[in-house]
Amino acid sequence: MSVKLFPKIHNAMWPGLVGKGDGVGQEPPIGLERMLELTAAAELGGQKFDGIDYFLFLPHTNPAASEDELRKIADLIAGKGFSVGSLVAPVWPGTVGDSAMGDSEARAKFLEAVKMACRIAGIFNEHGVRKYGVIRIDSAEFGVQKWREDAKANTSRIAETFREAATIAADHGERLAAEGEICWAGMHSWKDMLDLLEAVGMPGTLGFQADLAHTYLYLMGYNAPEYALLKEPYTMEEFYAAYEKMTDKLRPWTIDFHVAQNDGEVHGAGSHDKTGKHCRADDPNGKLDIAKCASYWLKDAPSRGIEHICWDGCMFSNATLEDPATWNTILAKMIEVRNTCGWNA
Image (tube, rainbow, N blue to C red; front, side, top):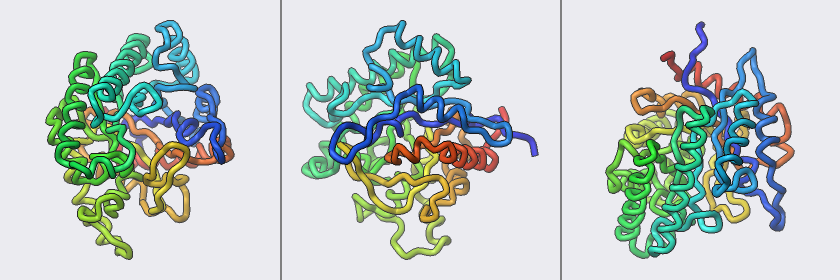
């Protein structure tokens, strides 16, 4: 069997940051160079990761870094044999940004975070280390309680902010992908996510980032029981019928894709609100046939401009992240996804 060339296989750098810190019970972040080293060491049958997706915030990167500093980072990444794909804009309170449904000051901060991400994307593109990928955003409104106070108006406000952000991105030759995740207001169910994408109405510039772990919780209606498509216990026939219904709605909007596993639990760490729990790729409690589920999202992927996929496994212990076996197992699963769903350009 010939080796599929696409999608390119990337590893995320943010597992070294998300949920890490100096708070009670937290472990320290793992630096960018170490995350690159761990990724570069993974190998299976001569195949390796092609690149990385990248969170634009400290301690990995100062989003206000000078062009010279950013070029040095690009050199570091390229020196490991990697491309850069999608970039995560620092849109949350406590980083650069603030809530997309907040007041004018908060929304201005959100848009500033998108501008900074577009600037960095441009420098990486010019450098040559980045040739594809999107800029990832969300509503930056933790939890759904405040959103529910006036759901219609709040979704409208998020959509307005997203339209402004998409205009900024388009001016820089970039696309934005909103990651569906149950912790983000207005994006916390498959139906609310779809309503928001349609309200923005800019499919050429703002689309959806699907994550296997997070969208599993969409099926279960964790934060929107009225839109649950599946309930425990369920048969696999019921699962795939529900899965097809969800992916048929969101796949046309999907421009970026995260491979992940989920055990059906909900998890949070540090300041990160409750969300779908990422599991190890080989977790025996994992609910997903990763390659089969990925095939639903990656159908006709080239027509939506998808050139790479990224492993996303957040909130793992540092011991797990430092274990080379972790990354070899993940790489094997990513290769399985490419063999199942891939293509040659």
